[in-house]
Length: 321
Image (cartoon, rainbow, N blue to C red; front, side, top):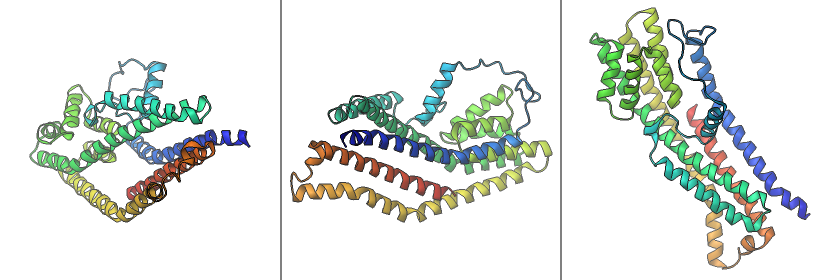
């Protein structure tokens, strides 16, 4: 029985990691479908991996260590190539992750066998880093999406005045607030080096994961190749983006009841424990001092965390559709 109880904690941790990985794969499938659709509209590359009408890529190929580092940063949701997305200094976030990992490992050491506290500490640090970096990326994307209709409207005004796309993007870089001005300033610099407008927008879509930029790129690319009235097409795109934002706001409002219910369910264990401690002091001491109580507390805390995360993922997925 003692051996089975000692194996219960690592089995629960492994189960939690598998559930998190499954949710991550499901959440990433939507972005993969969008990228597949985008790839169908991008001109095919030749055997050297070069787009038609463009010279070879002179960038050095990534070393295996760099690829592993990139995968680690993606796992931690670090906003790579998005310096403006940081609200908190990355050094402070990394330091906080290390402190939380060490504190969790030290707190778990008296109650677990030697290998397990290290894993629990690493898991706590990784979860903290993912939460902070993911929040920064989500905040950055929300600001970009809110500013996108005004940016597209500037492109419409510029094209109706007879200006080329490059001048329209330069106007966005100088007139729009950050972070849209920063991203379009980068696009202007890339276009000055010979990158086409649709390719620069596709790169922006890959950096920020804002699907509207991919739609914008497809619209401009198809219109420039097939001809027609560019201003009217972009105006239609601006209206479509505004409708998408209005529907997203409506879905967010409709999900408020579900978010309130999830918050109440998540707070019930903590409120109940606090009330029991006030009514009968010392009633919950076995959960912290008895090995069996520590195991029960670990199982309960793991279940609460997974439940909160599952409810959040269900609400997020429902509001995205």
